[in-house]
Length: 354
Image 1 (tube, rainbow, N blue to C red):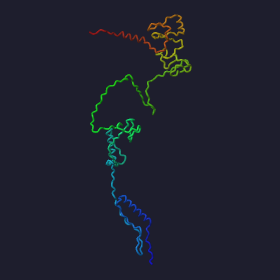
Image 2 (cartoon, rainbow, N blue to C red):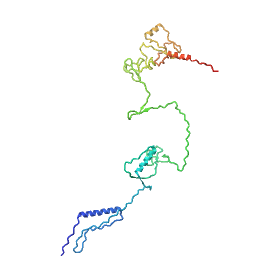
Image 3 (cartoon, helix red, strand yellow):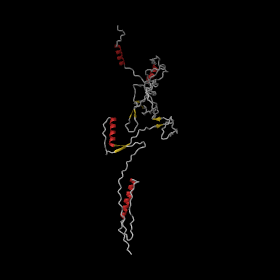
Image 4 (cartoon, rainbow, N blue to C red):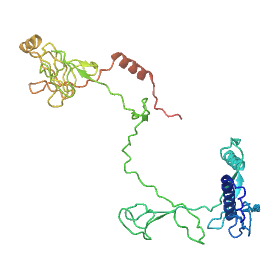
């Protein structure tokens, strides 16, 4: 009997794994490049046996044909309208923008190139106009739907459109300005109040409104030296009614020598009093208080009463006491004499030149 033949040198497992990986990668590359064209790979994985004392040969990989590089077609993206993007350099876009800014604002603008120049795709699209429709019932704007979101009104022809639709093939007629008549102002006597404001120095505060300056008047009780509250005539501490003796700050003795309007008469008998004619309301000159010593002596002596300058009515018991009022200052006698001398010096002749 013949002895069994010994097996040949065994192929290490690492080489087998490396070959199979390389073959699988080449297959996937060829599939990606062209699915219709495939190369056949023949590799003997099992050893061939011969009749008789044959020795198994190690599996040798067949040479793999190198895949030729397939030129991939450049894909051109097209839109639904058939327009293709154009490529333009970034520097050219910046130069065009600088030129437009220079023409608009009359300045010289130098484009700045911060990074490397590169190509940019630009898609030329026609200008589209946004149209807004509003409901003619509630004046609400229609969104994507044709039903108003507020009053649920279905959009109709009466709903206005913005911008307005231009009539096709219609010549523009010359626009003539309408002659507007002059309307009479019925409120000619009423002046509109204009508020003058200026910004506040404090940030975020309301603007300051200019108001006419007002004088703050303070009245003090002459008995307890307490300030009268605003709008009251009775002292809060001693219940004294405000009279002509209560001082005023600031004082106006020249205009109101006898007291201020609204004040009560004083109980001081040393102050002279004034009476007014009950027929013509003319004020008599001041006389002593009737309860003073001079007034009592005048009554006892039977002095003649004062006579009204206007109506020549003698002062009687019906003539009331004159309340405090504004007194016009008497003119200066020296000023009157100077004016009269100037008038006398003027010679006005009525003779007409012949």
